[in-house]
Image 1 (cartoon, rainbow, N blue to C red):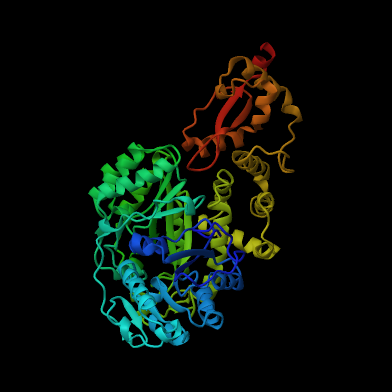
Image 2 (image 1 turned 60 degrees about the vertical axis):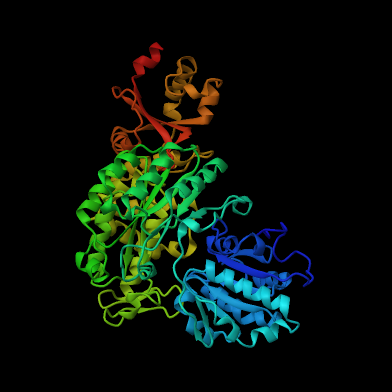
Length: 626
């Protein structure tokens, strides 16, 4: 991690003198590619005159706690503020316990959703905490920073003496102190918030998070967003101006953090239209939406977008109507299915669908039905998640009513319910892992539909695959990528051995869809009998450029290295043309006795990540004549 202002690697910079007073805002992200907009928003909102007193530091949960502790110690801040979420709460708890031993005069504050909802418990658990910033933090932080600056400028006593009483903090709204909470703070006007990304240097090679609204119109009982009763929209003129900054910089991805981006039709349409019309060919935008409220106008607009420009995350959660009613999520499931299908028709929008296991009234069989119904919508990604019983949510208050037992510590994940046994949760964990490895990786596009035919449904196949992994010990060894193809072939040999030759061909296609292999897999067919046809094709392509005009400066041999031509049996070829037809690629001639797929790696499908393909067929007579 780089120090924002000094460009130094945390833990290696020299010890600083304590001449300048500083408030350190620290974020512990789940991954390096993530950024934490909260700490940047607090600093920017403080204003130009106060920002010089604010220092930022970003770490990840994969860093050893002592490394982070060392870095904070070397910075020697007067005050530290941690941004708390379920993925970092444990690590921040360790830091809150150990940091006072090294910096006894440094005040420690917590903020973020985990601190806001668990503030009293955290103050009891960590006696050295100074307090909690609750709710929206921008205005609260600015007042708190002014409080410290006033103290630093007007007192000769030590920082330790300043911290001994919180009486002088009670005039700041939005705090939870040991003496109790201060008054709640009014919600902010989003259009008045300054832009976080004037300086893009700290966000190089990271995902950019952006919000055009706060709050959610829905009241889903498992979600903390339901506590924010009012949806506030940022003025679209400001949104466009700020999005243009991302487009001008050519950032790779912008993730909107709006809980339901399309809750206001006009707001969503104006922003989507701007993104489509000002597409730079590089930047991708991610939105969380409710699919069942999409209008035909919105779907038409999205269908015009460049493939890969827009990703949509759609929280289905369950297809059990009784379950949805119990969690206060009211969804028109038929319309959801219709709209998801319409979004996928053009092959240009990446669709990510979510399911949650462990919700009320959803037993194992009910979840199986939900999974199969969502799976058949053919999303680009299907996330199988598990209920997290967040403190402060309605689900937490009603856990006893539903017989829900969950982990005491973050991420508060469900262990069992009145409908779902712990044994069921264990089995679903196995299914989740197989879905991640085989479906969400997008690497088995042709093979999976073929194997599914031997099972009662998609869920049954992943269930059997999870059992197979456990039986063979693969669930512990975590096989490498190419090895996973071989394991899928082993699985096919057990459940579908009569069609194993075709399965090998489909696996070969899946491998070449992803990359131009340097070494051929053992299960792929021998190319010797087909070399004459392959050489003929590339010699002909060198002369005519019918299929690969973009390689105009390459001779036949170079074309053979940059692309790949693979022969297939009639049965496999027919399946491939059916499976890959939604790529929109034009097929070549279909008559003849030799069938091939041409893989072109210069043009990959931006939604699915595949090489572009052409289906070719030609007769031996034509080869001899040519």
